[in-house]
Image (cartoon, rainbow, N blue to C red):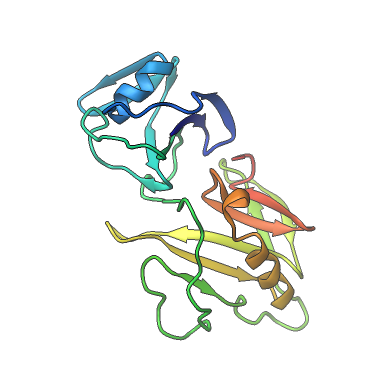
Length: 204
């Protein structure tokens, strides 16, 4: 079992409690063992003085319950993060792709990965993606060979991963990045120049 605490979607590590014995712990009790925690009304308000909003992920899935009552178990990995983004985003503990599905075909079922290229761009301009900061500033443009890995979720359904690219080479780069070490503590990842770029830019 491990407890990681970060801010800004993983950009700023605040602490790692390391392996912890379960001993009938709750999420809040485990967090309180290694950090200065302020909580009320079933929500963590601050950790070591860092204000939220705080979200917690257990084995990659967002846990919406009261952390004072949610039990953790041996082998669980707990990640607390303070960010202003969509609290419903979920990042699986393991990225396991279902068989590839062609864009425009049947929608990928929850918990699966949809793999395919971006819609065909104009032959004169080519496909281009802009990378934005959290403040809404475009700081980089990715062209041919760029990939993207992103998770979406609807209500309480398991996450659906989209693995895509500006072209076939971009899809291949995104598929190569679709693994646990690369996606750890990430919500969305662009792939350009043979390296991962956490999005929004500055989030990791």
